[in-house]
Image (cartoon, rainbow, N blue to C red; front, side):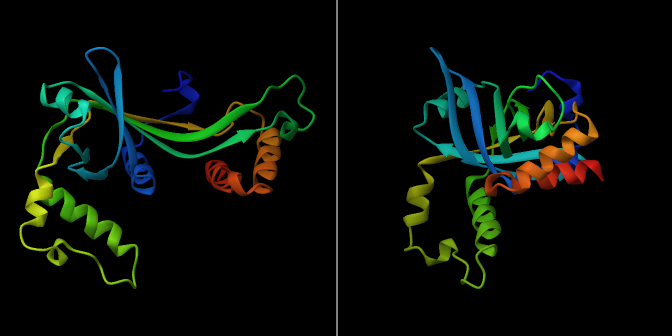
Length: 203
């Protein structure tokens, strides 16, 4: 988490939307010798205004063994990001390169969840984004195949005790400098998403 309060994002609905747009999370736990981290898709929802995150890991993953022992976890989501050139600040002198980005952090102790329901929900959500392709469902699998594969995963639910993000979008620069950054980013294919976020922030 960036230490500057200026970049802190605490709007729960905005953070949920950010996760839904970039659902591949990095689940981090303390291992017995070194930190452990594993990527996994995460389903994010709000229940009575509180965030609920669901994910799954391989049953044989070292991180899974730590979670089964009751370890706490930190899930990190990285949204769009872009390099910022000092040249884009215009006449503002003595600047250095930096990076603008959006991120989310969710911290807490995951609890076991229904793996079948999770996999059904994951496939339903992402298959719907592939229309007009007919959606895949586990009904297309041979009898018993799904149940056999299900034994190889563990599903979890996290109700975060800390849920916040970083919106680092040049808020510490002048309006003219931010306009220069937006113009510079807009001329690069990789910077368009951050340029749009900066425009949205400026209203």
